[in-house]
Length: 65
Image 1: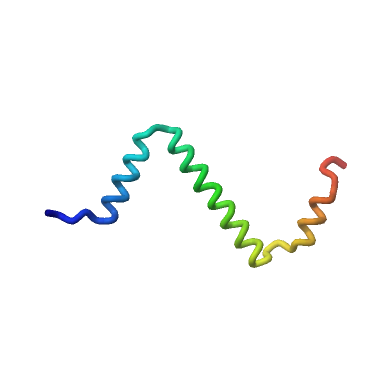
Image 2: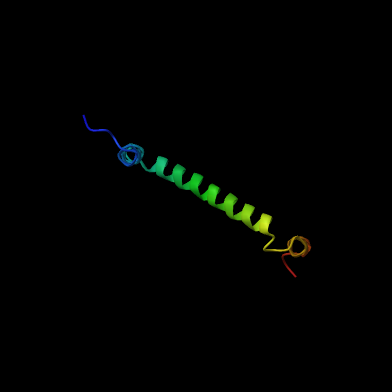
C-alpha cells in the first residue's frame, strides 16, 4: 500500500476546508491577516523601527486642526 505523504494530506485538508463554503475561507483569511498584523507589529516593536516617542506625539495631536 502506498504511503500518504504530508503534502497529499495537507492538500486533502485544504480541499476539505474549501468545500465547506465561503464563510470558512473568510475565517481563514481573517486568522491569517491577524497573524500577519501581529507578526509585523512584533518585529517593528522589537527592532524599534519606529521610535516610540514619535508614536506618542502622533497620538496626542488632534486629528482635526
